[in-house]
Image 1 (cartoon, helix red, strand yellow):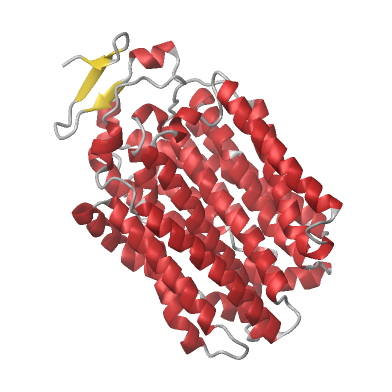
Image 2 (tube, one colour):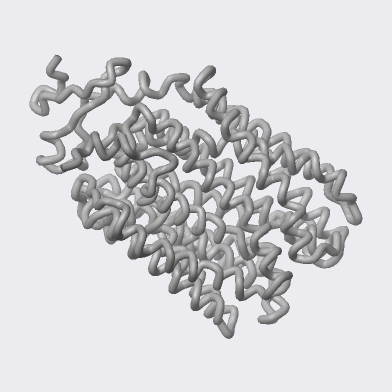
Length: 505
């Protein structure tokens, strides 16, 4: 019989557990932005305006964001593998419907189903890996997993552009079907079931959080057209504030909340998820618009627009090992700072480079800088998030981290899209370049703020945050009785006296 520790020792980047969860997370990560190079073609096919096209992206990223915490809780309670498989099935079904959608409205709805499935896949993939990997080997495994997800998001526009040119826009969704159908039976056989602390399903938390961000996105996407003082926009803004306040209130009062506020009180954890949000806000909001610039201002085909993004997608592969070396020598906070600082420089540089008729050579250096930034940041962020919480909170932490990543993506597309429309628009090459330049400065500013914030992270998270003695309130009595912590340096696990909240040395 294989014990948990023996099973953990077999998990590495070459194990079936890692390969299957990483492949699934890679597939759903690609779909964040796989449609962006196909948007002009999709818009022509359906006669959709820019708002409809924004919703084809935002419907996915919004449901992906708001249901991750609930999915993490469901995985802890009902089994991570079971919920993981359910999410993968939803994602495949949503992909099939999206590929055959006859209207833009049905396409948006199918993208929302895809996002719901992705929300069940991504955090549970990370939780499964974290559960199966000992802390002594977790840094390498999580760095590899984060790099794979970051590359998946970055190459989405490339995959979309190539498929649109070689086949049609339908294939950006159809390609998910054979991949999912191959992975699903292997997951059932190769991945062992695991559970976390049993928590109640926070229905009110899901309702308030999803409704709040739907209101916010509606206001951001429609504000330029209707006017920011229009009753609908003002009402949506007030609705967002009211629903967000209700969400926070319910989380404070609920015995087992979807987002434990005590978890947000941990400085390293709270800081790291804010960094995640700000990084993805600038990066993926920019990628959404850059693809439009290549096609509508420079006259690239979808494939050419996708291939133009290759430098930003390939650099993370080369830089990810460097991120690990920097983290080991100077601390993970230094690697995160370097990635965010390079992100600010790259987007600012790109803002100066874009112009009507600009040559690709003029744009290339900034894209390379952005690619290096992706590798430095995504190589460490998941590791930092999980190492800043006790082991019993890893499932929740994984859900919160990926939620903030998707919220950053969703808000980045909406806010940078609004800035693009306000300062230029898609009327001609000049207005496209002007709008993109203004939007990129906002993304660069967000990354610069995050870089400064990264300097406040402790250099050694294990010494700062892992050495905890309090049993989380969210654990049930059985989990609390088994609560253990890792003693720094010794590699041994020491039980806690749950009555006195002190270690039994």
